[in-house]
Length: 454
Image (cartoon, rainbow, N blue to C red; front, top):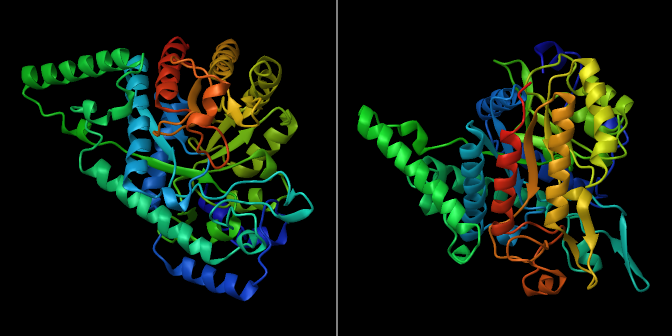
């Protein structure tokens, strides 16, 4: 985002003049205003230099010099802001990035869907049970899950609680990373106790052993301490859905001359909120963060090209990540025209695959689930399409957890629909468990390594 763009009349509250989808209806506007004033006065959750560091890393991934792993919970909850759950999520992302980096022979940029993923879009504003209709549950940042009129009423005070939980989460993650938790000299410390039986365990341990031996050899033979490998950068992301919350933490940095959304390093907008004249596009065109755009089968070439023109008019490197989510079997049909349109425009983007959302189905017992073989199939097709087009698939976006859940079927242990009820905990969408995530990382490593760089 150029200084000129930030100075052409854009305002953080300009979105309020546009039709804005997916916003809750707060009954008490005075209470909302009071909460937003308090939020605006609180310290930012992230810093502008962290945001700029991520933008440079995404620019490197756009050039094929790095790979981006974005993963985490479909929807965070306030009660799950605990040390055990946060550590487990971090461990899975670190282990996946280790597998990817080892296979790709290039840096992996780690972005967690965490420290702010508290709001979710809804297909319908109301949920009906029998003869009762109430506002839909929109995540812990907005209202409460219990099906009562009091619980479903949007509560402005939850915005403050979301800010507090996000800050606590990121503070703990930073402490872990800065304290050496991500030290490549000791990746064995990232193991999760419950996965010792995993068929993937031997393959992972072999990678750990090779990396540890290599580091020891280099240090002993050169006398150099590879201290830079003892810590790593870790970034956060969430869907920039609730614009009251996003605006409250948006600041003008006078020395840079641009605005930053400091609720997160990497916000994204979904298909439900990517209307060219809508409030979300208006808001995000004015902030300097790198950002993602989810694109599905309904995205047209014309729509995408116009979005890129509005959100990145200066064609800044590292600014835009296009996260395609087509569904297995649709990629070969839908993705090539979009790639061609972006190439014709000469737009600099990072292409990322989200193989989860397009492959959601309902099991016989009524549970939402995803089949690992369909997830793998979409990834395989995406790599093939990009290879044919001469573009670089430089990232993957996954919903996953470090907990021992049974929400997606398939994988090395052969989870099936009958296993779903054993440990189905998700609040919204089914997530990969550790074994499935590591299996997928190994597949991605193999596929991405075979890509030809642009």
